[in-house]
Image (cartoon, rainbow, N blue to C red; front, top):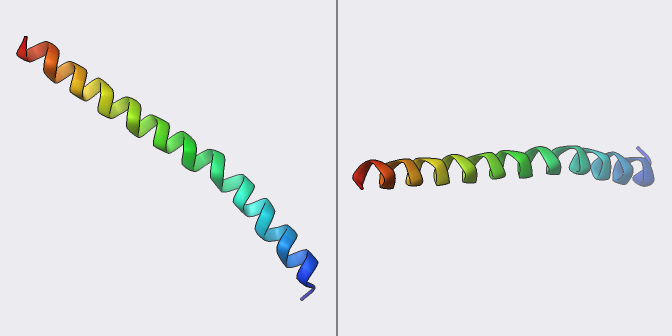
Length: 44
C-alpha cells in the first residue's frame, strides 16, 4: 500500500472523527453544567 494514500486516509479519518468527538465533549459539558445548575437550583 502506498504511504501517501495511507497518510491521506489517516488524515481524512481523523478530520471526520475530531468534530464528532468535540461535539460529544461539548454535549457532555453542557449536560454536566445543566445537572449542576439544576441541583443547585433545587437546593436553593
